[in-house]
Image 1 (cartoon, rainbow, N blue to C red):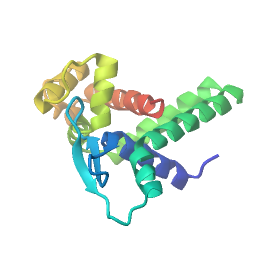
Image 2 (image 1 turned 180 degrees about the vertical axis):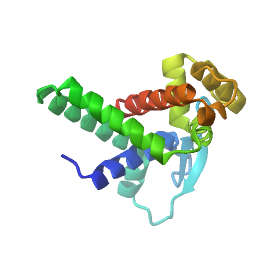
Image 3 (image 1 turned 30 degrees about the vertical axis):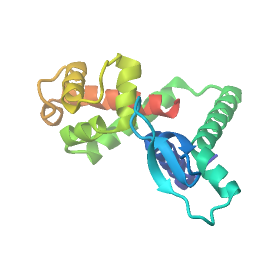
Length: 184
């Protein structure tokens, strides 16, 4: 079982990996590292390698993103296997834990509208919207805001702070996102 610090560090690694540019390659001169920063665009230079950077380090840097993706997939499969071998948990225990987590979240957060706004700017959250809700375009911040308001059935994000039903919908929506995130 991982410690809380290990779990937090793994979550940070996953987040950095998801947010990082992809498809790394060497430039023509062999000293520039290029990557795709925005999906469906061409490669741009992200780093200039020093002349003393040997081929082993260059190869390590070039494959870092895909190597981390591979390791995260292996870790996910191993975790799923361990979970599949564990006896199922009592549904009442799960429900109590879920209720406790929701109560804690209600106490911790007071500005749910701000929380929603922050999530709307999260690249992984946008990917969740595309995969789960088939949003056609997540590049436009206003379109994302409108889509999330429609999903939550609110006129403005401010209702998340004033309407308990809207707040519960947002907390459930966030929980769905967090569950989705752990399985990607």
